[in-house]
Length: 181
Image (cartoon, rainbow, N blue to C red; front, side, top):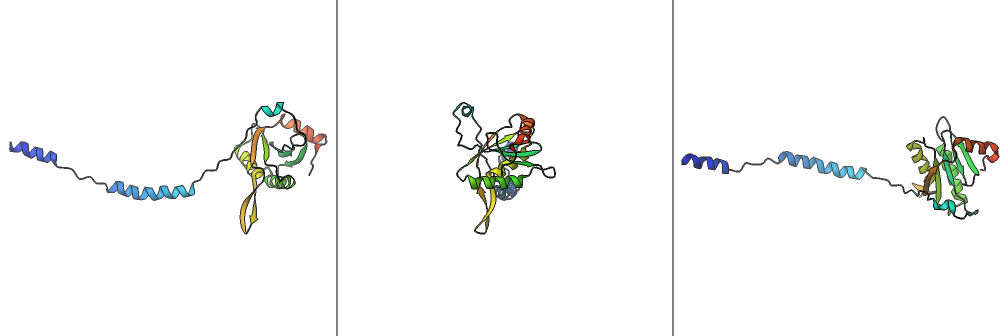
């Protein structure tokens, strides 16, 4: 009988839990997570995709529909009615985003109330080119009160496909549409 009591006593003793490794993990993990929250932020760009309703409605000749068409060899800024405002060929194998920004700034000076623009892309346009074009037509850096801030250009961006491919726009440009700067 004494042996049974001794066995029961051994089983009833509570084992000590060592939580030191878990506490060490928490001490390291909490500051790391808090620091990563400070450096991580997500930027969301609102896009307005064109609806099919605009094509069937009345055409307003006074309204200007700004477009930036992105081709493999150039960027074309147009008014949406077939008139090319500025043709920006590639420089050293890269799209001329700085010139695009200057053209957008000039257009904003001429039309300060205008907020929308359409970016037209070819199927093979890469993502980084799309983002760079959207950044240049949305805002530009300027200095205000000794701080560099982003001045708004055309923040309402719609996306679409380039009409007719490279051949049609090249034919329009060669036929005398030219640059209207």
